[in-house]
Image 1 (cartoon, one colour):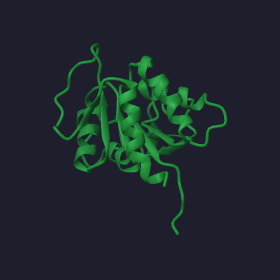
Image 2: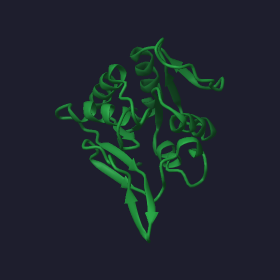
Image 3: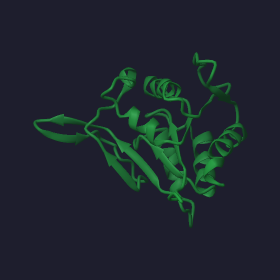
Image 4: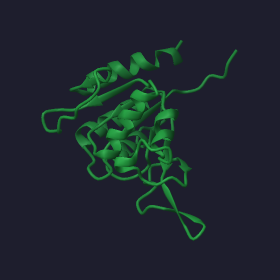
Length: 181
């Protein structure tokens, strides 16, 4: 018999804007359904979802942050603001922030996507777009949230789109059902 573990739900999104109206209720709900939360460990959506997740009492899951770093003079230096205060399990890397280069082999985005059992992409920029591309490439279940206030992104046909928290909940529960058997 294999080892039982909690599923890991990766939430990707803006490193500057929090999108609190969707990230906060998503974080609380994820904590309530007993999963681990994985983010890039920084500000913006990452902080908002982590803060809400961490604020749920008696939760079983933990906040995991994959922390970017750069090598300067033979030492790894983390970017200011990383990890955010709600990261409970920081995974420190020597890999830089990704931006438009997020699909390159030396991007920490590979770790974010490969470690997640299911991915929820909230509004973001080039880094989030690269994480969406990696999820498609690695055939990971991913749902991308957008509402009337977010810019439309051209997505591959295989990517499921969400227009509400309810859409996200249904997708996540369906995607992690194998861990609940």
